[in-house]
Image (cartoon, rainbow, N blue to C red; front, side, top):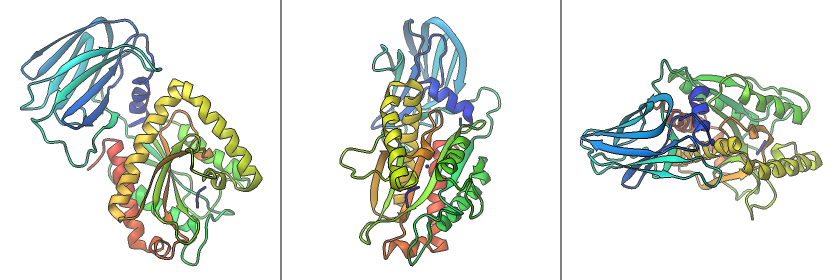
Length: 372
């Protein structure tokens, strides 16, 4: 049932890409759209730009110097970008000979930005990259540290979560999380588990959730994924993913109430978190985290639905205590309904758990630019 840099260096640069900086240029946001690739660089609040395209190199001269930065975006049409002093260069992929740049003034809480668009009839967009996805570029500034992911198998110990004639939630969550860990570690990702056995972190539910959530900000964490199994009436089925925010309008009773402890205590905690979710919209750091959390949730949800053929219940926001951390991309995923007469027995099968784990791990690796 419901219960929530990239080494943090890369995450830190990604956050900076959404902040109103006065002196630093960070790694760009990179988006693959229908017919073009877009790079968006945050700029100092006051600067100008002049660009020249020669062959496959776009050179942009800025009105003021910014710190050095370079990287290799995982996107069609572009192979590299580099910044040194006042000069920014974007290297186009073989066959690409067109690119444009323009300045966007600071607005809507975002800094002044340099937007570079590269038409891509010269390179086919990979099928694995959905249209309009946006993510931080990988970096080659020195030796990139290994990304670290926190996996949180929800419930455990004195809180088994949902239980049906077919499955017990705490068991399914842990089995899938352990399989995800294996695949991530095999592909160069450090993994921290909130639990590796059937145990709770604290007998008090709120304290238990708090200890899990704190692991998202302990050291350098690239992503936090809380894994759950849902329950409802016997007709409910499907996969859904959440990132932190107020419950969507028309969503009915907040799913997070159950995961935040249930009963009056869960109601009170969820109401308080929902209020906090509204206030975070005015915080730039929280906006950055929310943006990347949404991207991670979308990637994980799409991968799970594609791999299993399960019903899509969408990507939503809700006030989950365990994914409230304001600085780390954090999501909560519901693998399916253990209470459903078809989905419940499937969730108990080791082969289906492996399918879920592989799909989840692949989505996380893609988010981290570690796809094998």
